Image 1 (cartoon, rainbow, N blue to C red):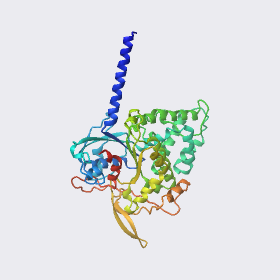
Image 2 (tube, rainbow, N blue to C red):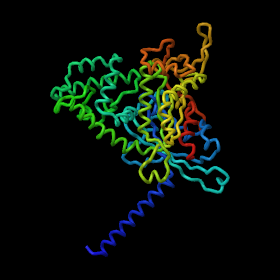
Image 3 (tube, rainbow, N blue to C red):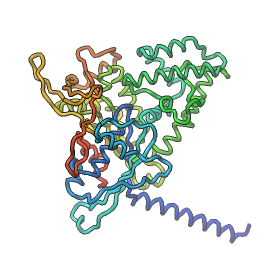
Image 4 (cartoon, one colour):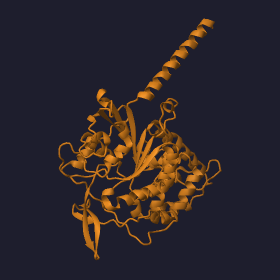
Length: 473
């Protein structure tokens, strides 16, 4: 090979590298799109949140807490095709029709990754805002099933560690009896038998369904509940058990499949979708966990703390993006269904969420991310009321019950002023609350008439939007 040819190849390589760096820097510095991840635990209301957020950003009459709205700087907002052609579109219109149609009902839960793009035409603020033309800002909203989100906590766990933690908790849960009884007859060192492996995996899946129904957040591996095209595959045919070093044993094969699940299912999901998020909202049904008891509250705190480590929080500088080390800039931890409580208790609900996540939030703040805890209701299904009971006046909420369509007033219980009154017994392994009883009801959405320009009725959705995207508008 001649010297001239070598020099030419080197020069072309330098030119290509320079061009790539230039495109990366330009994209990093002038990117006008923001990716908002909406994630959370089962029954936390992710689909309802996205539907209401979009409806209220298109018709902004109820979004006074979003500064760009109160300043009148948003000239237009409209939906566009999402940029990722291989990701299903979030079915906004169908979900909105469910909430606002003649027979209002809650839309179906998320069962796959989906996406929606909102485009804004926004005038710049400040002294020079009038001299600049309106600019376009894109908001890409990414929805993840809560069950898949929880799988991110498995990435740093071994099969032995995961099994040990889970098997320590199962004896406290009645719906785990069937699985534990089957496991008691299994020798992890026995030769692998596929029929036995499938039976254990099926019983373990039944346990996960019971845990979800009971309001527990630790329901991973999530694909066991939403298997999709992986149903029946070896990657979804394992269960927790004692560790085995015996080659060809059932325990060794379970470990191999656990690691395959992490490498073939969880890591690609993280790489292709989750790791590209700019801002994140994590929704949790804190009231449901409180109603379920101390075990559910303790698991909620542990699960949310583990999840934060997957968000890789930090500041998104253009150089960080160029080097591929993107970090989540802002994370909002939202306790949903605040409309199930009188407004006088909302601050207590926020305090419980903040206390559950104290360690996780401190870690995120230290890494450079901004975090916030808030009590919200993406769609308000109740009105506030007062009722007399036992000689005292109770601050209640009133709404339409899902089970029979009748109106009912509801008092969930008085949340403590000090959140440690709940979190302490939960961390200590208490079986039940000693001096309190917390209820829960399922209210149906209310098909209220809306004035032109008004979105759906909500609680603090505008403040949540201000924290998450307000600086970009």
